[in-house]
Image (cartoon, rainbow, N blue to C red; front, top):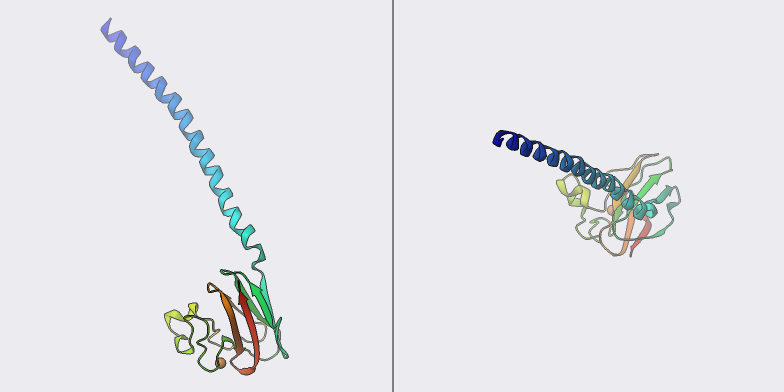
Length: 152
Ligand SMILES: [Cu+2]
């Protein structure tokens, strides 16, 4: 009799575990289903992130571009000659915080507002602006050609 009671107890315990097990994955799945939706939100916020400046023989178009902090600007060279977008002032390129032509070729290069190299015909250069302000820049290969990025 005692043994039967013990077996029944095990059966009830196993049944309880089965019920628990069938419930648990559902909550896990529903939380997993929610997580892929989360990354869908940032691209919506970054939808205005297509900040493109065209480089022609006449210079930068548009000459002034207004963006929000954290957005990326891409310069596309549609001229037949090379161009080199870089922070004002020529030749030090130190206006944008943390920038300076001496950082080209170092580990800090990616954090400087400086292409650090000629951008060949058809080439592109991108920079993400974290700092708010009015940031003038120029073509290091032709310093008379200038532009301004306003970061709100
Ligand atoms: Cu320069």
